Length: 248
Image: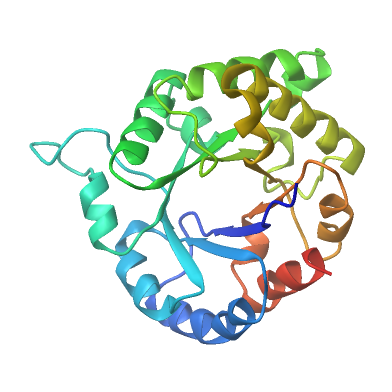
């Protein structure tokens, strides 16, 4: 089965309006000339700006949203607001949300579930810390993350999972391809237990210090369908090189 690759840029709390204009000017031609799906997750205040510049070949996603309908929730943004700004995807469960902002699996599944119900495509992140890996708990953590994070999500091939070993995010360390494949293959087996054959259609990405120099080796792995890219997605030339090297 051929799954269309995804290369997703997670800008986190980076870039400003003038930076974004130049980035989009440079990346749109790259997206127009690749068979892969290109997604950008900008800070929420720039969602509409990115969506306007994206054209038809780039999809835009929200880094965060609240699960309630519009109301008295100061500082939050609703799914409908995100959609109104042009988003197609919604990120949920990124390790920084889990570990810095203490978002539980219950919060992750509520966010992913409401995004799906309201017509957004959830991209759900899972992954272990260095302490958990060194203790031999990686597969147990991944099983728990998958079961708990998908509790409110319906089986659908449009759901995307991103495996992000926490110890490799922003550290310069990359999970060796064989270990990344082992983890992602295990994730697919857990999806198969939960959802049956649709698991073979679900795209699973690797995230964690993805660079132009290591993406091809990662993409050669059987179950890796793309990358969720942080730091290397902040410059159009490096993100473009990842897309190009990952689709050769």
